[in-house]
Length: 468
Image 1: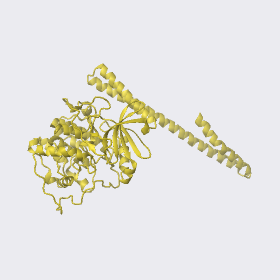
Image 2 (image 1 turned 90 degrees about the vertical axis):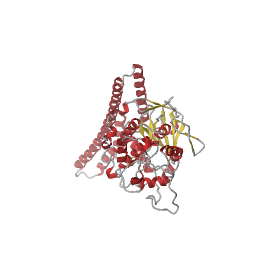
Image 3 (image 1 turned 45 degrees about the vertical axis):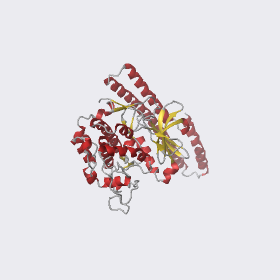
């Protein structure tokens, strides 16, 4: 009714103006002019009414869609709980937890959020553009991960498009394989992304605690990584930074893909390179050519890798161990580069260190570019023929690489025989992290608040292995 009055008030001056104009005009043709004005007025009113009708219809259509999806999620959870033979008390607790999360999500959608709405707690990540903290919303007590990015630094380094792509991807992709984005906002200095907090830590920490995984354990996490990569490829995004640090684990040990700061939509006319590699990456002679690295046993190489891994993870240089050769060479590349990274991670899970690891990043880059001569499987690792075959078909030329024609090429590989792809996220995970409460951060690295350098933590937070 208020809207109708406001439209009427807006129309009234025009009516007066038109009637005043008609009085001054000569009598000839007055009737036709009056009809024209009335017709124009009628058209304007019709357009406004149509727009209002469309807005109301869309609003309620969206509300009904959200309610239907909410009902479907509850029905799905009830069905899974019934099939899983869960006690009635546990079923009720899980259903209450779902309702709580649904309500929080709807409230977050309605409310215009700001940093003052959150209590900032433990820092669990730090990078060139900002930090990631566990935070608690003040009104509800709900726990999230807040990614805080400094806008001036992003502008200086030309990273604005990357952050937009990250936000867009998180908003577009509705998948239980990737970290969920609840909302985003900004102030004069920072951009904030409020995401779900996954207290299980990351794959890097798990690998450093376990050294190596069995093939059954690795198969579970490689399979979940395949689903995660597939979910973003279906939306025409390339991640470009698949590595153990970006594979987070929820409190039940299931994997979620995160950190889309380097992701790119595939329909970009050009993909500007972001990896600064020295010009002599092809392995040619250098003036300051270093002596070849000493040959090490698998155990010695594993110890050397672990000694340097944390430092590389948080340095400005980073680690190139998972980057595809076509990316390092600044050639054109597509989604296939993510499958190369998967092969490197699978190798590390089974052997203990990445396939092209060297004492310094530049040597690693040279090995990756010359992968034909440097991809070797240590006998001590005792990999199955199927595992070696899959790794070899991921760490190879783009034209021969599995995944080039879609994730199904990887899913049907013999190494995955018996894998129930549709049930992975309903199964018990290979490892269940120890999580004491919603604010537990024992599975993440510790950061000194007053120091820009990260501090390594001891191997606290034991992992409990469960059967499949």
